[in-house]
Length: 73
Image: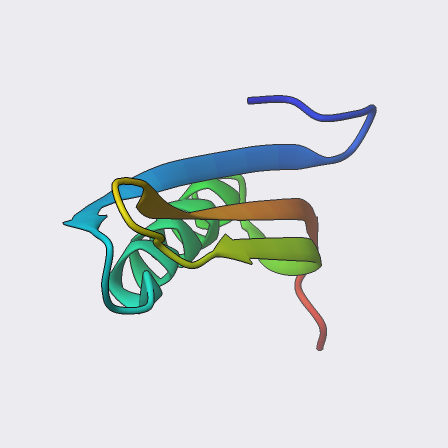
């Protein structure tokens, strides 16, 4: 999802409710962002992350805002 002129946003909710950090979800969205940029011949640059830990009856989630930049030499 486009979040600005040169920024993108990817978010995912964990299936775990009430326990455990959503680290697997964060890893998945990071891989998605890296693949998205790689398909453009660029590398991913993290702008912002937001990790919401699960609470009683509420699943955890992770959001990654990123941009694709030219690969450094």
